[in-house]
Amino acid sequence: MELKLYQVDAFADNVFKGNPAAVCPLDKWLPDEIMQLIAEENNLPETAFYVPAGDEFQIRWFTPKSEVKLCGHATLASAYVIFDILKYHGETITFRSKSGKLEVKKDNDRLAMDFPAQPPAPCIIPKDLENALNKRPAACLRSEDYIVVYENEEDITALTPDNDLMKRLDLRGVIITSGSKKYDFVLRFFAPKFGIPEDPVTGSALTQLIPYWAEELGKVKMSARQVSKRGGDILCELKGGRVTISGRAVKYLEGEISIKA
Figure 1: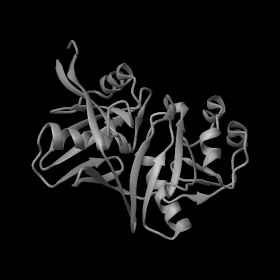
Figure 2: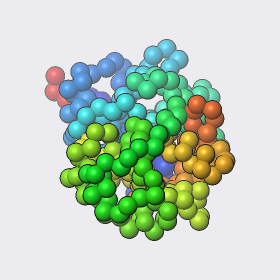
Figure 3: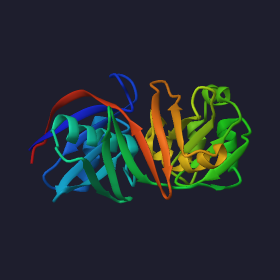
Figure 4: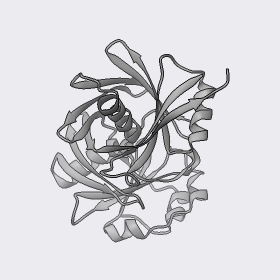
């Protein structure tokens, strides 16, 4: 069995930036264990698989360790493959996922993803998380992930979290964030129990941060940067119960997977 595979750097203007994702178009779903093995073999933050379904596409995402319910950068990468490489002529790509309907449109030289918002709620910071960060935050919230807010951007870039302690947490991962002088806010994201010590750029984290920072800053259109080693710029907008997350993508690799039946 031969399968096409694309590796795309999402939220990036050039290769070696942003967040790498593998995209594997399928005619029909493979067994879950095969998709998991492909993701493990790719050893990238996410591998996306999609299947055409009429005028729409069904999409699933796998880390090297397990399937996840939502992934932003691999959705952006998949839309880039469909629009720019496979020359899809529609104006909007509609994905159906375990997180519901996700739409992606072309917005000049960017791709704009329409995702459900996941507003966080304040919480007491877990002791393991406080010890993992080794610096008391200004606030802690929770949604899909823990969101830890600091007062200064320097706090975000300087932190070296303890991933072993963060593996004990009950939620998917940890977002650390602060306001910024150049951007509206900055962030970093860690999900060590899913095999991702630090994610370069995390679209799904924005579904939680956009509602939070929109309320804090009193604005619905914002710019953000994930200040990981590779880094990535994101344009953000809150639209009621939805968020728009916009970025660019570039192809790094195109090839084939060979699997013996």
